[in-house]
Length: 160
Image (cartoon, rainbow, N blue to C red):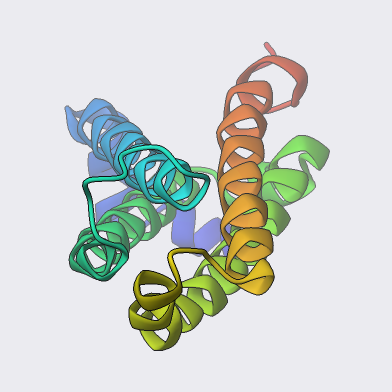
């Protein structure tokens, strides 16, 4: 199955054309957008950008999920070019595990923020659950980014 995937017309197009740099660029923009927007949200919850209402942060959430979708689509595109090698690479497995955890934690955080942001505004303070979830989400996405870079340098995907 993995061999078949790597020889599909799509995977070969990615390998033999501008598909690889295009997918890698979309992947990088998706990562930058998630990290950037989650950092803004996280910093606001930690007390910076006080002129920005907590409820306004909910408007950033759809953009974060669009960026995650771009990461998933471009990531699958890159993975399809050599799926067996990716699955055999320990560093890629670590990164992929972090992605799954980061998505789940971020989903929980966004759900919490949607339900509690008005209360945070009324009280002038963020719940400890909101702070823990946003901190975990930001740290996990930073770890995903580092894992992605280390996949290129510590993994076995790009050796000889």
